Length: 489
Ligand code: NAD
Image (cartoon, rainbow, N blue to C red; front, side):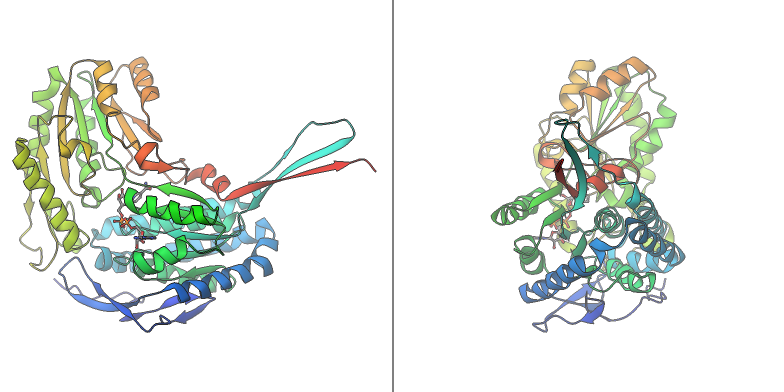
């Protein structure tokens, strides 16, 4: 099977995009672009440093003060919607690029491109609906509260859903009147660069949207600690989130942290299990389990435990990890380190004595140099086991029995994370009680939308982070307020 890129975005050398221009790394360094599909190097990426970040932040500041924040919200919104249409028109090409760069199955990559287009449509069309308040105060005074942009926003993006995370974060920030400097993940930067190149034609003024590529420890750290940044949106691991928040604190800059998860789906014995099964499986294999809101734990009422685990085991045995262009259930892990990390968790589970119930296969078409791991399910898993507590970020599922509603709630909330949850039952009052007891940002009843919809506020509790992105609430998060008090003259 050909792994050559046919997309019009294909090229070997990728530079930063700053102030509307291609710009190689100031220090001249590059990073190899390795495809997880086969381990082959297929290009190079600018390895940005603190100086490149300075240049990008300066450009964003000039654009903020010069054009973007003064433009009408309607005009800004129309530009973003035009960019959304351009992304939609290029969805196939972007999907091909993403599949090669990140390894996700082509159809999932296409869904990401369409989600990005929808984010731009959603935030573009919301820009002129961001309203303020009038506060009743002294009879002699008028008090108005305006929603105003933060200024220059830094966006640090992970590799697992580059287009979607760019869409929710940059789309909302620009719609609110901020300008942006984006640091994509070194393992998957290409679609963000390709979309930024489209932005100029859509009418985004130079300097409004800038991308600096490179390593987290250099370009990322420089952006997180830059004194010219007014707000930061970080999506990634809890450990990096801590470093980013500490760096931002030195400049008294606000941060949204969208971090990891260990999300549980609770299955009561009265659930419509035929309906639940595809969701239970998909929630852990989507993007190879490399999804913050992956449903990596299933809690099953004891009386249904054997029936549920038997059906899950059958399904897992049939799953195939394979070449992203051949329609596999899941593609490869993002890189060699992630593959080794997942394999480390699998051998750790064996040492801990967890019972492996079933595992899928690596398809024969999977190139040998690629980073493939089969999906694996463990049951019954102790809720205290490492696999039940830590985010694996791979296709590894644990199933644990519970005796009653109270125990289900305790187990579901029993990790340091709190991102999303699922509840499966035919008893609507119980579903409401349990859903409202979940310490998470989104709860799905008789469905499970890993990542949720574009319109739905999303974010975590505890180790899953703080602040909300997506939905209208995400737009509000990229603003602050200015209160105007006017006395009668
Ligand atoms: P990561 O934290 O390693 O990297 C995320 C980004 O931070 C990358 O761009 C990286 O280059 C950058 N970075 C690394 N070190 C940095 C530093 N010292 N200073 C500034 N930036 C730095 O995360 P990852 O491995 O790319 O992504 C996986 C993690 O992201 C998982 O924990 C996953 O759950 C989480 N995630 C969360 C969400 C969400 O919305 N909650 C969405 C996707 C992924």
